[in-house]
Length: 168
Image 1 (cartoon, rainbow, N blue to C red):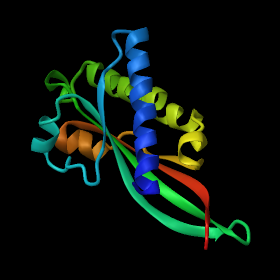
Image 2 (cartoon, rainbow, N blue to C red; image 1 turned 135 degrees about the vertical axis):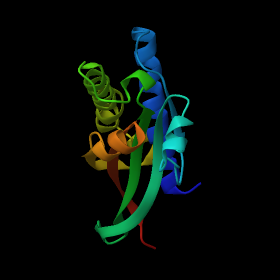
Image 3 (spheres, rainbow, N blue to C red; image 1 turned 90 degrees about the horizontal axis):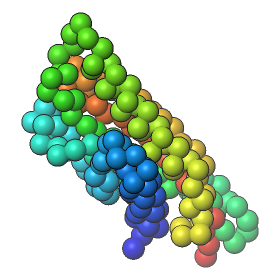
Image 4 (tube, rainbow, N blue to C red; image 1 turned 180 degrees about the vertical axis):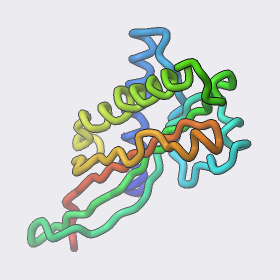
């Protein structure tokens, strides 16, 4: 298995574990499906409506050479994307007088922060993957375009890991 896939699978496992623990601690926690996917399809309203529940896609993005680390090793950077998607409940699809839709989106943002972003930024991945988290970029907290066009909550996170690997 490639290093990139190993890292993506480690991220997936950490998120799954955090969600399961949160549900045990508080049964009102929103459950989610977490899966590694090379090309998640959430581009149309139909694809969004086919989602069974909140879904966290762990997407291996790529690898690049960063710099020589030592004479014998190169520092390589591996990128993993996280795409968190959920359909807004039908009764909240249309903005109205009530704050129900805003509250639901606020709760989804808090869920992403607590059970995805904070989890992946607090974990030491080095024992299982030999890599270290270099950066975590919450690229889009909530895509307003997806809310308006598809009735979907979409959040994006990009992670960069580095590993010093042999160059021989």
